[in-house]
Length: 116
Image (tube, rainbow, N blue to C red; front, top):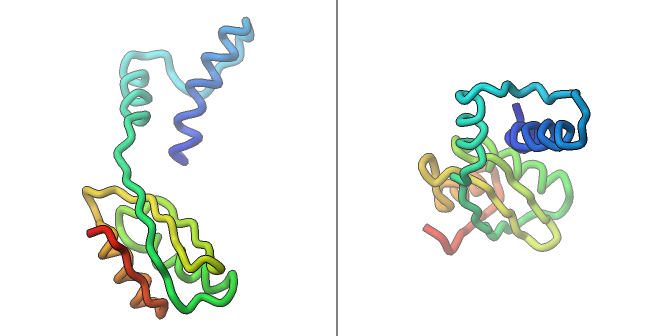
């Protein structure tokens, strides 16, 4: 399940119950599921900004995003081809900005990050 949706469902369900609506989200009220939902709310990711050269259009930005997202541990990539910049959300336990920049460079777009 998409992480954002997983985080929202318990909140929506609680809101419906608070309003007196008996409708429930697909989450269980068991202590185990409550612990799992709480564990998912703990932020574990990091964000980096990578400078990317050679992008001239939206298709280039899509190629850069695809290259970044192919790196294990990258959860999202927002690429602005006009600004020559990619904002990457990643798990620092699995990858780092240098490895992400390297993958983008290998895809044909010279990339660099000030972060290690």
